[in-house]
Length: 282
Image (cartoon, rainbow, N blue to C red; front, side, top):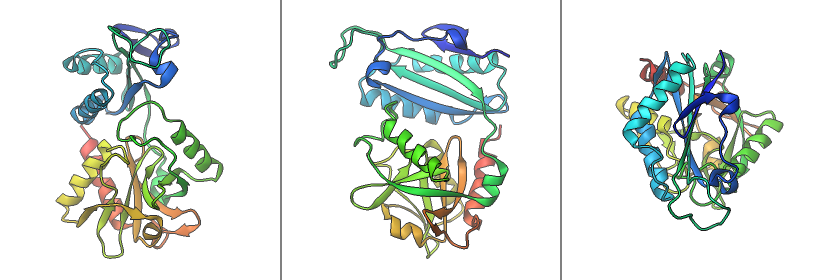
C-alpha cells in the first residue's frame, strides 16, 4: 500500500510530501522531532511524547504548528491511512519557511511534517544474545536534552559503531562520564545490584522509554540511582542495557572488547524488558 504523510494540513502520497526549500529545518536544523511507537494500531505513551515535544518547542521558542489537542487526530489519521499495525510515527516541527537568515524570522508560521512506517522491533536474536557497543567521545552540542534535528554527531557515532561491527555507540564526555548512546539511554547494574543511569540533565535526552523503565524498576523494589558513571564503572557492571523507542530494552553484553558480567543478558535486564513489553501492549 502506498505510504501517506502529512505536511502542513495536507495528507499526501509520501513521494509528494515535500517541504519548502527555505524551511529552516532544512537550512539550520531549526526543528524538533518525536518518534512514537505504534502497537496493534494504537499509539503508545502519547502524552509523554507530546509533553517532551512541548518542552523542545518551548526551549527553542518555536510555536506549536497546530494546537496540541489536534495532534492525536493527525497521528491517528496517519496510522489509519497507512493501515499501520506495528510501526513508528515520526513528527517534525520546524520554525517554518523564510529567507535564509540566522536570526528568527518575524511572523512566520511553524511547519509540521508527520510520517509513518512499519517496524516490528529488534531482531529476536539480538534480544536473546545481547549486543556489543563501542565507546566514542561525546562531540554533541551542550543541549542534547532538546530533541532537535541537528543529529550529525549522533549519525557519525552510530556509523563508527556500525563500521566496528557494533550495534550502538556509548558517548563519553570530556570528564570521563558515559552520557548516553547515539540514539539510546544507558543503564548498568552495579556490582552491588543498584541500577544506575545518567541523570536527566542537559547532558542527555530524557527518553520516554528511560522514564518508564525507571518506574518499572522502582516498582520492582530495585535500588535506582540517577548519577553519572565512568566507562571504567560500566565495565565492572553485572549487567548493562540500552533503552529507546526502537530498541525498547536491549541487553548489552560487550563494551569495546570487554565482556559485561558473564557475557549474557542478565536477569534484571530480562525482567525489565518483559515488563516494558507488557506496558506497551494495548
